[in-house]
Amino acid sequence: MDFQFLQIAAQSGPMALAALVTIYIAAVSCFLGLVIGTLLLVCVNVKLWPVPGLIRLYSSYIRGTPALVQILVFYYALPPLIGLDIGPMTAGILAISFNSGAYVAEILRGGLSRITTGQLEAASALGMRRFLIWRKIILPQVYYSVIPLLVNEFTMVIKITPLLSTITIVELTRQSQYLITSTFRPVEVLTIAALIYFVICFSVSQFGELLQRRSRKYRM
Amino acid sequence: MEFDYLAIWNNRSLLAEGLATTLFISFVAIPLSIMFGALIALMRVSGNMFLRSFATAYVEIIRNTPFLIQIFMVFYALPFIGIRLSGLPTGVLCLAIYGAAYYSEIFRGGIESVPKGQFDACKALGLSYWFYMRRIIVPQLYKYVIPPGTNIALIMIKESSLLSMITVAELTYVAHDINGRTFSPVESFAAIALLYWLVSALFLAFADWLKSKTGREDGDELFIVR
Image (cartoon, rainbow over all chains, first blue to last red):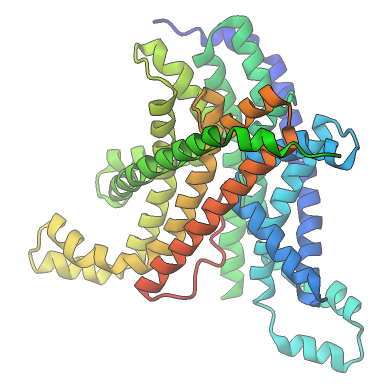
């Protein structure tokens, strides 16, 4: 058999654009995931009666069901339930954000456990309100200590985005499927797609590891 | 709005078959990937330059590309080199290859946590490689390996839902099927979400039992992979 990488590479312009769509989706979802994760972290620690239980339920749902099923639930099952017709893009980004949020909350919880209780006692002894303590003392330290893990979370989100191709979002995977049907060269097209994903994820995860090494060096 | 519970009840045998297929795929793929993973981990810590770089490349490629692309690659590319497999064997193979990369990282982490002096001592005593690996190094690994290992197994059960894209009739595929025939998206997708949730809960209970067997309670707080 003969490969035609050059001919296919010449036609892969739309794939580069679609890669930008993938990165865009991942960036938006990651940001929303960070917001959701922070809310979850704060709500769990504020101990208002039904809230921590509900959050545990939510977290167990996200960890216990596949991301694909969550995306399908968001896209197919939510619009009839709430009677609001959200498009595939909104549904997809929301599904990934809620998925990521649960994991970000876990990451932040790890960061929170490193903060000594003495700081909180000092802050409340100084008469700071709870909101102010969270905003000025807890959250900045939590975020700072988990930056490497959050960078890795971005690669995780990038690796979920191909699932959005099932709900008709034209990102890298769906664009390469289009190219496969028009050229009938699956091996070449998929290799190029895999290469693009690899370059994105590998550079981001190496960056994350660099940050992790550096933070370990400074902590000791 | 009204729910069409009959759509689920009438298709209960289909759902049961889908669940059985999902479980079957996982129970074949997980042991396979543990074996592959152990092999890759041994290659990664071996002295042979070629084996080591092969294993590193394998792990990095699998970990940095989406599983869906890997599935499509195997499903579409294998026929081009003359190997024709149907969906189910392809799916099991892909899942095993995918899980092996993550398992090998766990095993490597475990092996590297064993003090280097032990390896030197074994060599100084003249023990053969397989003997000291089997009798001295590996028994120390269980407590390191089991908490993250069960995590990866759960991830593999969940990732098996992606095999619906290459026409493997597992749970997600069945939901698409029911939705297509009865047009009941809420009921069908909610039903499979609940089934997956149930499977995960049972598996986590099993994982806790396994952890209590190895006697290490503090788990993998920061070991989060998907």
